[in-house]
Image 1 (tube, rainbow, N blue to C red):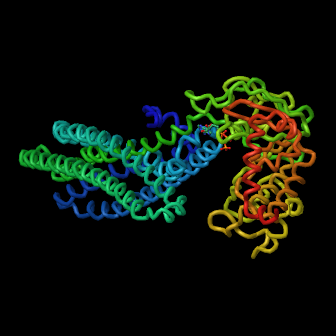
Image 2 (cartoon, helix red, strand yellow):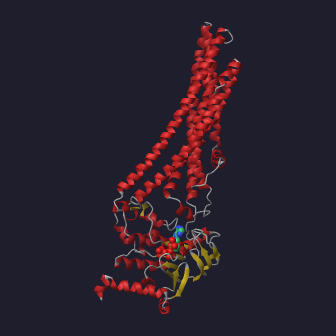
Length: 590
Ligand SMILES: Nc1ncnc2c1ncn2[C@@H]1O[C@H](COP(=O)(O)OP(=O)(O)OP(=O)(O)O)[C@@H](O)[C@H]1O
């Protein structure tokens, strides 16, 4: 359950954005005042023209008729400017908030991403940002305009007949009470709608991303039922919102009409007693709506404002999360050189408090050497990589790259590192742009050279549009081996002195395997390489093998030394060797 954020969300999150576009809001304030003045002039116009008509003063009626058309033009201009400036302000605030939110989200720690569903984050980026319009646009302005309009109407009516003005005002507070109680209910309901919508986005995302599993296990009906259930709950909440809105609307309209009837009744009596003119009664009737109306429409406005604040709260929760990095780094042409090496000094680490994964991990990797990490599943090999990449902070001890502590300025340290992960992620876009991710500012020539060295150039040129072929979700499908070559090309382009290589587990045919091994050897040349090796056949000639077990280093040495020790490595090797010999292809050869 996310932490609740209290009221200052408007002041702390939204006000700075409103301030950023203060000039538009200042113009809006002027337009707002012009609208109120024009409204009062209209009332005065009704009052005067009615009195002139009743007293048979035709020339005054004619003069005022012309004045009326000017007031209409002013009112139209005010309306136009109001709507235009409002959408200008709202879109500017929303755009810059969305930009800031995305820039912040992308810098959040890995821990945040592993503990939040991507669908929830997408919902915050899209739906919640869409919802905040109410808190910085129409509803905010109405919250200012409506009380001002009520005060101006009251002041005008007091000048005509103070007791009747007080009577007209009497029912206003009742609407305010109504507004307050309905507003609370609507806010709570609004929060539930937003949470459920977020969950639904997660569900839909999962259903599409997990398409293969759904097909393979025949889960289509189950997923559809799950979606229908969620949709029914959402419909229930939306209906409740509709009922609350309808109740509020009915209550406030009733009060407003009752006030008008009361004013009409008492006002008519005052006319009979000649204490009020007909024109003044017309002014009263037209302004009673202006007096009571804001109290009632404030209810809806307040509820809308609250709902937008609920969305802003969810955005605020993300914005308050401390970022993991200050400024995103992209490798530059001058990658630093590694002279000393990488040191892990007494490193302990836990993903969550109840289970320590790495325990007193000590290791020195001299510059230029290749070190392989092997060990059973769950031993902590990937965790060593995650910490080296600075994705998590160590709990104790330190990691030094060339004597500099990782974590103090992780951004700069990352310039030392490049990664070839087990699974290559391809972003939507061309093959060229995917390789270019390795280094910002890489030329086409650099990209082609990297692809040639990664043995990817040939298959890329055979694709329909060569380097411009679209990959990613909606693009062409590449094989595991081809994706890995793109990944190697990226790393070659990055040209960092330290390479982290998480060997792919999926078996490739022997020709692709040989080609990838050649590409990797090119990549590893003159670099310090850390490799997570799943197949022991790939570690036979590395400088050092680190055998990990349950978060500790169980054994260390080269292949022959470890075989001689007859420990964990020797037994792992024996098992893999037996399996290898049993493989049908090998048996054919024997
Ligand atoms: N994000 C995470 N949150 C919590 N626990 C995690 C997380 N990632 C890994 N672990 C746990 O840490 C332990 C070490 O995992 P790690 O992935 O480092 O092992 P590994 O040796 O790389 O295993 P494999 O060879 O299967 O990839 C495991 O018990 C795993 O469950």
